[in-house]
Image (tube, rainbow, N blue to C red; front, side, top):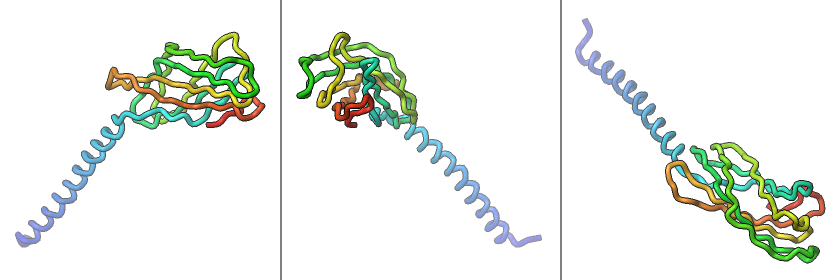
Length: 157
């Protein structure tokens, strides 16, 4: 038979190892849940003007752990030196675009029908209103797009 001191040491080592594994599991699970539930703000990673459709296509990333829903778009058009179009505002355009977590989603902003195509120097200040699934509050993201090149993909991010 073994000495009682050796048995106590072995049981203590096994208990510590088991406690470390169980504690690590619960800690990592809790941290993952906490990070996943942090509300994030969408990030505009790219914007391109589509001349044929008279729209600006925004590539938006949701860096959070929960899906967000864009519910409304608004924008202000400010003409550059080369355009004859006057300034105008389009507000409260209802949309329903889901931004999945960790995914880049294309969001199209349709410019005012019947207006001139964007020219060099034109600026479109877009506002996207969205809500988080854990809150009914509305949050906004504002992005300024400046037409800087003659081709249709031009624009300042």
